[in-house]
Each structure stands twice: as C-alpha cells, then as structure tokens.
Amino acid sequence: MTARLNDRELDRVLDAWLSEGPATVSGAALAGALERIPVTRQRRLSGRWLGPLAELRQAERWRPAIRVAGILVVLAALAGVVALAALIGAPPGPDPSPTPATTSPSVDADVSQAPSSTPQSSPPASVELQLDGSPLAADQWEFKGCPPVTITEPDGERVCRFTDGWHRLEIYGLSQPGLDGAGIATSDSGVRVRIWWYRGEIGDTLHLGDFESTQGECRLNLTDLTDTLANGTIDCTAVPGAYSTTVGGTEQETKVDLRGSFTFNPSTGAIEGF
Amino acid sequence: MVVMRRDLVARAQWGDEVAFAELATEIADRLFSVAYRILRDVDAANDATQEALVTIWRELPALRDPERFDAWSYRIVVNAAYAEHKRARRSIPVALSMPASLDDDPIGALVDRDQLERGFARLPIEQRTALVLQHFCDLSLPEIAEVMGTPLGTIRSRLHYARDAMRAALEADLRPAGAGQGELA
Image (cartoon, rainbow over all chains, first blue to last red; front, side, top):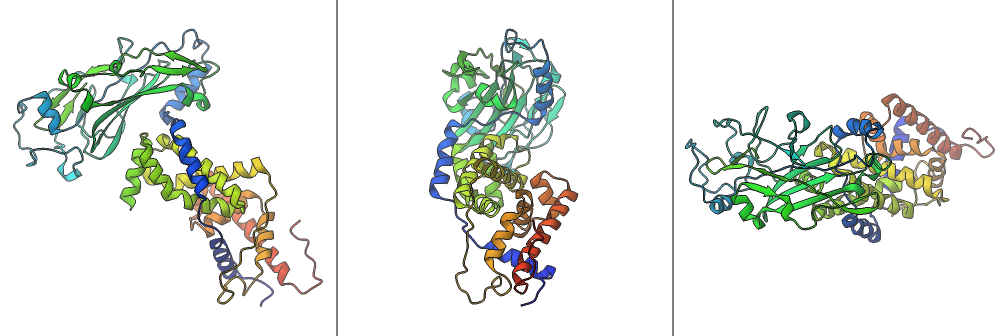
C-alpha cells in the first residue's frame, strides 16, 4: 500500500466506490410520485412568455379589475385521416397531383409516408384567431413546433411532416392577459385537439409559481365531434366544464371563444388554415 | 430505445399521464442512484427522487428539446437532492457499503471505505455533486456545468478541491500512526 494516491488510483477508487450502493428506488417513492401526477398540473408556460409576463406583472394597469377578460382561442385541426375524409364526404380535392400511393394515409404514418411536403398550390388560407370576438393581430400568435399537417399561415406556409404524439401550436397575445395555446395530436385512438389557456389576475397572483393554479384546458376528441368537423369548425364551447378555472382560489367560469374553421384537403391529407 | 424514450417524453409533454408513468418507471432508478450518491441516505434519496419525478412532470412542457431530456432530468434531480439536503438537514448516517466479495475489491486494496464515506460527507454538497456527475454519471465537464447550472471554471475548481479533499482524507488513513490529520478542517 502506497502512502500517496496518484490521480489514476484516485479516479479508480472514486469510480468503484461511487458505483457501489443501492440503485433501485423504493416502490413507495415511485408510487407516491405517480399518485401525485393526476393532481399536478403541468406548467404550460413557454420561455417565450417569460419576458412579457414579467412586464405584464409589473404593469400597473394590469389589475384584477381589468385582468383577463377573456382568453383564448385557438384552433387546431387535423390530419389526414381517411375516416375523416369519409365523414366529411369530400370528393377528391382540386389538386390531382400525384399523391402517395397509399389510399389511406395513416395518422401514424412513417415520415416517408407523410403527406407531400411540396408547398400547396392553393392560395394561403385566411387564418383568423379571435379573442373574445376580436381578431388577434398576426404578431400576436404563431404556430410553434411542427404540426403534423400542412398549415397555411398568414405570413407564409410551413410544411411539416407526420410524427406521432402531440404537436404544439401556440398562440399568444402579448397584449392580452390571457395565455393560450393549442395542440393537435394523432394517435391510434383518433385525433385529439387540446386547447389550454391560462388565466390569472395579473397582479398579486400572477407569477410563475402560481400559474399552474390559474390554468385550464379543454380536450377534444374529434371522433366525438363529427358534426363540428363536418362544418369545418371546432368549437370548444361544446365541451362541458371546459371553462371552469380557478383564479385566486375561487372557481370561476371563463368565457372562451374558441372557434375556427379549416379546410381539409383529402388529396394531400392537409389541413389548410383555420 | 432512444426513439422510444423520445416518444415517451414528447407524449408526456402534452399531458399523457400513461406515457409519463412509463417514462418515470424507466428513469426512476437512475434518478435515485444519483440522488443517493449525492446524499448518501436512502430515505432522503427516495424523497428527492419522488420530488424530482413530480417536478419533471410539471416542468416537462418547458423542455424545448426532448433530446436533452437526460441532462435536464439530471439537473432536476440534483436540485431535488439539494432541496432535500437543505430541508432535512438530517444527520445522514454513514452508510458503510461492503463489497459482495472481499476478493478482487479494487477499493479495499487501496483504502478504507469508511474513510471514503467520511471524506465525502465533509465535502460541500456542490462538490459531492460534481464528483458524482463525473465519476458515476460519466459526464464531461461541460455537461456537468450544464447540469449544475454553473460556469465551467467553477466546476473545474469544485472538482479540484473535491479531489484534493478526498485524497487527503484517504491519505490520512494511509499515514503511519501518529501522523497529523488536521488538513481538512
């Protein structure tokens, strides 16, 4: 045994020693965490919001009295589901350009089977999002992430390919006290639209730590809303209880004007606009 | 496996509790292992792991790049371990872990585990964490800096002092009887 450890020996000792010891979490700890999940709301605040929120919080004019009048809105829409095409009963779209040989594009399609990423030849759809009946300016919202459908935006077109899971669409109104967002997703069980919003009294209670207690969300399963889809509109008001939210410990009804329209192009599997 | 993990993360980000349960089950042991090695206390490590999992669920939507989930989750469990350490301030018992076999024991051939435990327990928790991330998690210095949210130079410094302290603690045990042992005060 030497009187001094060199670096290599020390590394070896530390590596070996730290590799020893328990390596399995207790079942109780894991179960305890999982039990807390259903009652723990996820924070739905993107980094993009941090600056504006800080400003909002400090702004004198944002008082509880004026605070969030409304909220949000959005819309989302969905992807190439043959079942959807059938429900809509739409004839082949106006663009007869070659499409993937698959006659029934799956919502779970592999990227290689995704709808064509070729820009749509149709003119950009008019996209309008409303907050309490008033249109949101183009600079107050944007799409984020990569929706599994072709989305036409006011300022151009983005084409995204199919992937599984939720896809984020965020709409934000920097001048609005309400936060909002929406997501669309595809899964084996169908197409889902999820809209969430945040509402708070932009005063004492509005800070990041409280956010999770002042948000609500509405989840739609489009397979249950065929009539709505047929009309090209998704209306979250059809969801009972979607507007119940808690502000400052008091449950309130939140009026959310959540509607929009889209055009589904069965030949490309694309959804254009809202 | 990577794709599956990424898919679970993506689904959990959007509120899929089933996906998160699967993800949590997959990562819980790793988080616990890190927490235990920092805290050296099984109960505290279990508590930290539970808190970390709930925090991961709550904050997951803020994770911009699912590819960075592992480093991000390390950061959360490290913070949970810090919180646990600070909150409990419990007297952490020295866990004397004995090897399964005294044969072929790379540690015992050089040093005494008791000295390792005591030397480690004397380190500030930030230095312990740096050592764990380097020697247990095999993270690079930049990765450690990212996980700990600390400048790279600070990480180098912490590791330098931590290693010196551990070496001193171990060498104290190696010295002939009667030698001074006060350097670590």
